[in-house]
Amino acid sequence: MWLVVLSVPLLPAFIVVSSRYCVKVAVLCHRALAWALRLVRGRVCVRSTHAFVFSKCTHGKVDSVLETFDLYAGTHPSLCISPQIGEALDEAVRRVRPSRVLELGMHCGYSSVRLLRLLPSAGRLITVELDPLTAELGEEIILVAGFKHSQFQVLTSSSAEAILTLRSVLELNQEASEGLNLVLMDHDPQQYLPDLLALERGELLCPSGCSVLLIYRNQRAGDLREILSYIRARPDCYCIKSKLQFMTEIFYQKESIRVDRVSRM
Image 1 (cartoon, rainbow, N blue to C red):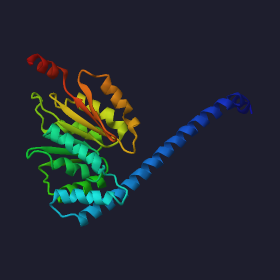
Image 2 (image 1 turned 60 degrees about the vertical axis):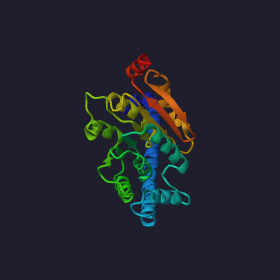
Image 3 (image 1 turned 90 degrees about the vertical axis):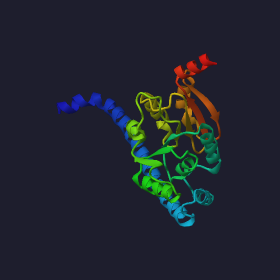
Image 4 (image 1 turned 180 degrees about the horizontal axis):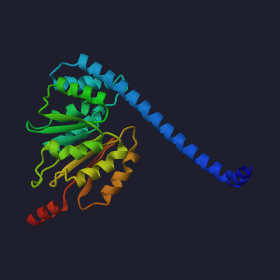
């Protein structure tokens, strides 16, 4: 009986705490459900896209693979970037002329094929995909387009885990000024800034210059607010090169390289 008497004054606090935890639990459940739905829909989309492209395209012909992707996206929901973003991506690759490219977010392999077809013969693409099924089907599409495993590598892991292994994967010389010339981020926008910081800490961005392309879908430019704020706060090594409707390009270059170039002029 005395326990009941003592617990009465604590009842309001218990109710408040319980309600707060209920809200948190509800939020977590909602996020988990949303993630599961995205995963299921994404897998269905990837399977459907892969089946269409694999059966309709001319194997070994890059242009046919891309045209078949576009044909599918014109009549079905698709995770692939639009042809308009693809053209902007092509323009950036031709301008940068990268030899080492990192793609975060493989999806169906569409962007991977667009990137690979513009790389030099000695160029290499590392593409990262979290979902094993998506990675497997995307890799098959890259091979269908006519590319060889010596030209690309698929890492099936989170972006954070993949970045930790990139130096050994790319066989970068610790003493030489080597690194990635182009990074395409088309995965979770909330990971854009953490992954950029991880690439910077690991000295994986080419010090003489690296373009980072940020894709945002469904006109959600607000997804880039955090990373763009960081870029604007670091004018010593970053600048915003261009902003399009669904893609923003930022440019990285070590300050010491900039100073050295200015002094030579």
